[in-house]
Image 1 (cartoon, rainbow, N blue to C red):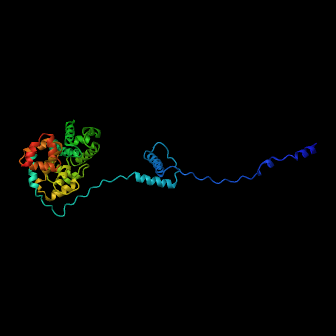
Image 2: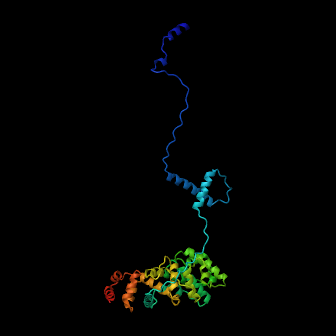
Image 3: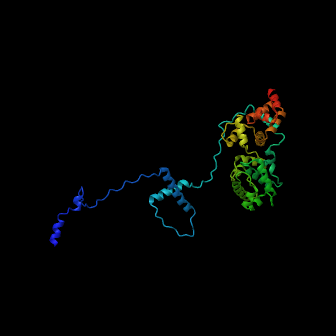
Length: 361
């Protein structure tokens, strides 16, 4: 029976023979490694995420958890170096306070401008009414104490508050401090909490910084026997005090003319008039001191700061004063040179005819 079955199956074609090709089993071969996919992330995006990771690491370093144990790190040497470099680049080292180098005087004294006497006298005439903001809220007007040391201290504080702040706001802050229990004295401010001082001077420019500067300067005054420094150099060593403030304080508080206090009004106008050729108020001061007779040094600041304030902030009043002065044509032309357009402003205030008549003279 078995032999019969074998004879029958020998005539049946195999499955492989029916295929059009030989189906030969071959051992599996190793496939080639797949080509790496081209990254679609741009270099800028990569830098962004890298920076983001670095910032996260820095943030963790800046505010460590003191209660948690130190964590081990698996950061590679190259990553550590990169993070260290990024840290040093993004976190600048604290700067040491350096004194600015003094502006050298001109190699030779500048000549007195030919129009100085005429223009100075004209501005003095225009300012004779003392109605500019600086006349009521400037340092000369705000120190009220009858005690000499307190008077000097209040003069210093008024000038420290005046930086980047209009005089009216300085006046408000000074009066709040003077009305505060204990008054505006060295002892009272030294004992005053910084938050209280900050509330009293709120509204002046950079009041947070000025709070710190006033407290530090007051501590110096305490160390000097409850008085302010007696020299311009000593005043300039106080935080927040520069040459302009120092020279004005010396003039008002100590009655000593140590230099000219030059503000932005004076710097702008004196360059326009050609009296100096400077890039900042300190250069203006140095050049001005090289030719201005010393008899004018303690008066020129108040006079010209007030003139600048009026021509910028009180234009109608300035025009009317010019028309009423002894030299209206010269006064109007001076005002135009420093930025007051008497034609457009005259039209606004109904002064066209008077201005035309004055200019035509």
